[in-house]
Image 1: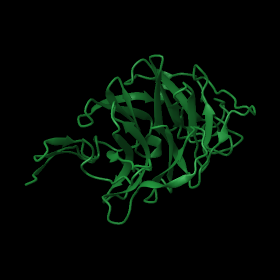
Image 2: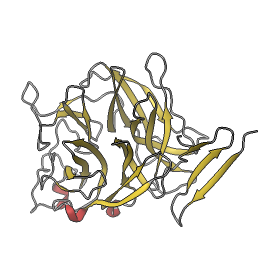
Image 3: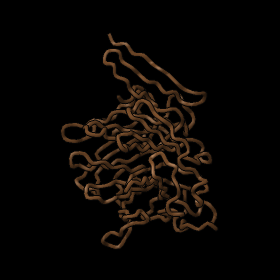
Image 4: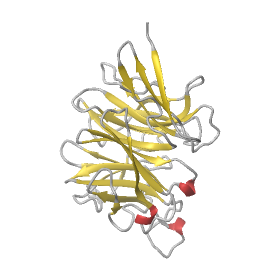
Length: 336
């Protein structure tokens, strides 16, 4: 007989976290959400055998003024690292920051993020004397530890202009096997690709002299992500509207990190009768030394009438023999 025990911890007005133990297998799973609180846009990473998640603090726009991070040795027990970066550390940042992305290089940890939600193409160059909506974009902070504290790296946005009509948000840095650091980013249904220079202060132009080339696949809205498995580059992104149930994750496969990226289909989406809605803006973790993969994503619990009440979850991601990704099933159980 299979016996399931639920251990629940939580606090008022925040999502509860359930750890699930099955007596039959003695497996302990993370439970979903994996940690307490309203958090979205999670990027997962592994540094020195420790799992890390860097999410957006999911609240009203004018309250998204800091980042927390979470670390775990086992994907089950998570330590919260509070306020690893906030608006007081970024002089040009006056409004919200969100969608962090992190990478390690030369024993430094670089945290990229979107800020100020700039809306005006052609008027977005950094100028501290302009109205706050006239500048912003993608910034970068640096620390000696993955848990911070992080400090502003450039004193200005890394990208503050609109290229190919892509809003400068939702960045992801991918290190290829040849050591190239590719920089994917873009909102407003446009995705750009650049190559970071050696010290991450700017970009190496492409052969035509341009800093960014557009690689937008069919259906792309925002939230780009890439990983490499068995020689195949998987490019993933979010579709639909982030504020409601149409949000979902789609993907393409290529033999090059530069594409082309032809949409294959969706791998994560909410349907009628599911346990949550609006699943998207994800990342992927590979358990070190294995071919086990985990999708880290946000979703909205049911019932839920607040668009910003999003929680961070993990579920396993599996592949068919031909390399195509099987649909990811949302669970309360989470991952082992």
